[in-house]
Length: 591
Image (cartoon, rainbow, N blue to C red; front, side, top):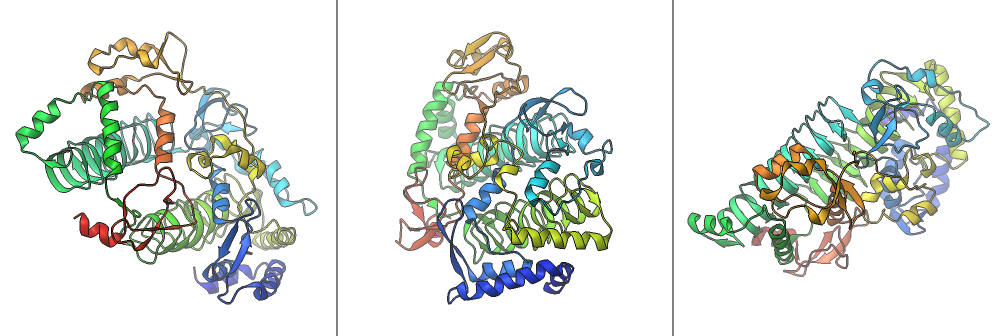
């Protein structure tokens, strides 16, 4: 969107525009010589710097400077959404027991996602009137608690009821953040893959087990940060490798064992002596693999084909400041996830999002402070809305325009009311940031925030206004004969079908689970020992291993040349690698 179009949209709110203009006039003398400003975070009390280009962006989109640091702004969005925790609740629509991302005592009406995404209910029936005599967010909370929410975020999927945040998946079980995948289980961040188990980020892969941030794998197990590999196990940072076992930093290799080049016959003999169907053998090699990774060369970051960018996992992008997991994006900052996003700040996810701020969603254009935005344009403070424009503080709308609190207005009345709301919010110090903690629809302790180091301190979050509560696990049927996890047979070849009828007690983590027939068949077919740890613990540890999402990018010396380089994991962090090379040294050493 051009500056002219943005200005034109703001001119429909003269009271707000005048107040915001005065705000920036008064701000001008407080800026430093570069045009930026150091500020104290309202929550953490830590100092953070608003860069001159940040100030220009806030002026351009018409918002005041943030009162929260980038990390605390991210916490608000991470704390608003639950992806990985599932519960049993009664549907408000049918009164049936259903799986949901909301705990049993949720104050919100919960509908089956098939019903919620269909035509069987009308969001306008829950419309509220705006009351200028009440503060905005207390009104929003009353409105929010009246509108139904979908039990799960599942779209165009088959046989995948125990999943969340998934689209076009088939016969998947306990899979999260997945798209276009089949016959997978216990995975996070899954894309266009089949027969993947216990993975974190396998893409375009088939038949994998414990694959982490890897692409185009085939029949490979215990693989991390690798691509284009097949028939291999225990690889770290390998590319285009076949028939390799326990190797690191390899390129275009075949028949390597512990990074030693072998003949085909030697390799097959060595591998045949290792029985990964035995849990004790698997644990032994996991320990050896950890030692191998400690001695491996680690990149300072995982950015590729990107310029003028800082953060991690940035690909084919330009001018991305302090970002994570973004691809083909330009002129964005403080953002996590996203494809082809432009001129936006503080976004989570999105494809083709432009000129937006503090938005979590699929696609947005000139949209602010909104959650699960899907094809939104010129919207603010909206949640779960789709293909709509010019809406303010709405929930669950589709194909709508000029609505406030789900109430339909004429275009003239809409702008008049929005002007009043925004002017009042700005005067009260409410306008300009994402929904406050008390509006998070799920307890903090089951939110996405708990998945990231730096945000997983519940006590700190509660001090900031988030709520937490103890919630019993209830999605699996845990009635029947139980056995201790340690009593599960060591060898998959000695495991009978009777294991499917038993409840496994993971005593170390105080959790119970069952194996599925699909899972047992996979482990038998590829001779892999059954895990005895609850899937949620395994996936949580994988998220921790990735390190923190910290928008304060750190510096560290290259282990090879001593040159200062940017890293996202500080050198003194427990998960920081020992050997870190800058980009030029890494590329010279590994090719």
